[in-house]
Length: 406
Image (cartoon, rainbow, N blue to C red; front, top):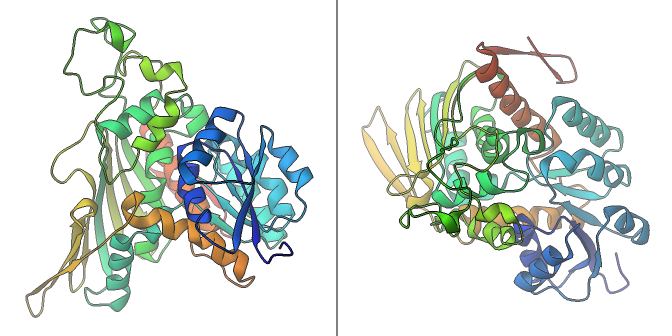
């Protein structure tokens, strides 16, 4: 902490997702963002402008942040998925309060390394599951915990991704490749796998999945570049339509720096799935069915959830800002109105503030910790193994909670 009493924070990776952290910290009197780092200085300048940050030092190498700022209180690592392990490990070893964007990493081995390090150094970590802070999902969890619908038996959930989200995944320099993003399930729906784990109050024990690249396949009738295409009404021209609640328009502001943004969404090189269904079995007997689908807009797109319990049901659509509850015995129906503010259905600001709580209170440990990230990753990785190899993947846990796929 500085002599002025402010908590010092560094933000590593200054793309679109980093804005959700920086804009919160810029408004706090007891938090000072002292270092920003991105391999592209244009990203740093754009992010700082969007957030209103001043007085920071800018870097292009995260190692310089580590070397030049020994008095950091916290760090937010918001870099491409496959870089997480290398960057975050030294900050874990320094025992800082660490916010790491989801997913925790792209492989089981790297996830285990991070989890082992967090346990060894007793470092508190916040994995970027912003939806746990969204009022819609907090209300669902609160209702489940109350017991009004009994024990959850099954959950049906989906993420019906907008044109803008689909464009971000398929055109991003790194999100469109399995090796750098970990795949569409991991990049887009690790949030949702964490929510299913949270709602179940249990651990996943098996996964089955189907899907692949069904829609955005190469088409010889389309040109390589959008500007050469006669299809003026294509939803995937260079500036596609966005869902306001998704808040992914911010990502496109940063993607304007890349040539990939101008490529046809069908013909651009990519290997990630655009349609995938996942079935999950939990140790307590609960089951979950999840669908990720691109190219969705209109009513009841975005995220839907329907939970069947022993005494009733909970259901809703995150963009409709209400949660419905029906209880069987008294045939009672009730609607809870939700008032989200900000991106990710109101989850962004609350999530970013979790790191502040960690810095202010050395005893505070967020629920969306390294192990939560590990379990979500395991489902995403197992789902791709299942869909590619054509079989169910079972989880075998050791006494420390680590998973072997069998």
